[in-house]
Length: 322
Ligand code: HSE
Image 1 (spheres, protein in one colour):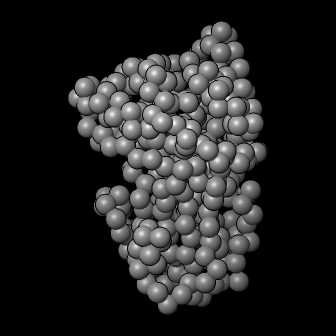
Image 2 (cartoon, protein in one colour):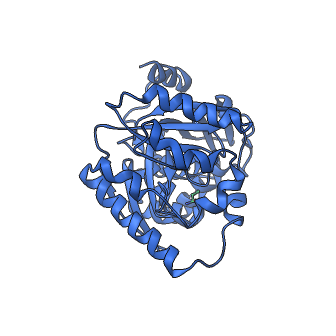
Image 3 (cartoon, helix red, strand yellow):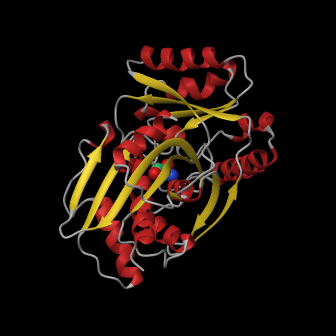
């Protein structure tokens, strides 16, 4: 059944890998994108916010394209839609902006036609487009996700983030595409490095599940991607080595970078010190950056029950202020 009044959804940014869990671990973060989708006589786009400036406003648009994939899968034809979107998720910085467009477009389209597809089906479709399930899983389901993907189907378990876990991200001004950050990775790794990562990734999942903050540091190191990506992010090697001295429980490249992400105990007395250290180290390496304190987002996609008469952008302004 098509919802003639249209639909509105909200979904979170995400970080991937958390160090050793390359292409498998993800966590939703409290930066959001909002999408409104309506059936229309002619396809139209209304984009708001600085992050949406360079996004194409024609049928090549990713949100439009994935919406059509959902309609095809469900056997309905809605070639013309009106899409409004506001996003606070920085583009191409390792915070899951492309996953948010994919998951957001799919979830909005599915809601628009009365949700015939399950979230698990949307997860398979989204993982198929991204080619890894980490960011899309976190954006869709919220919390912390551990997932496998066999090329067609994804299985996952969602872990509830610990109440005292906070996240500090340092976001460099420059952009780094995932494809460029994957090109520097070797095709093969040694058995020793494979064991290094499997053991740490396994321990990390157990530490996150059990609130073992003392083990986040030892379990968040990686030999599969971060050492190869270090040359792309000036200051990264030093920060990965030393951030523990400034109060980080764990530190990793966020997804394919260039953002770096520190897990922090909310009760830490060293928060300001860590913030200053991260910014200072980036600046020392010639990189302009901003820091943001975020929460793990417990919510994934939220579908608003009613589309009220309030204009889309006014609704969002109200939510951002709240
Ligand atoms: N797991 C992916 C990577 C995340 O590290 O390349 C980026 O989308």
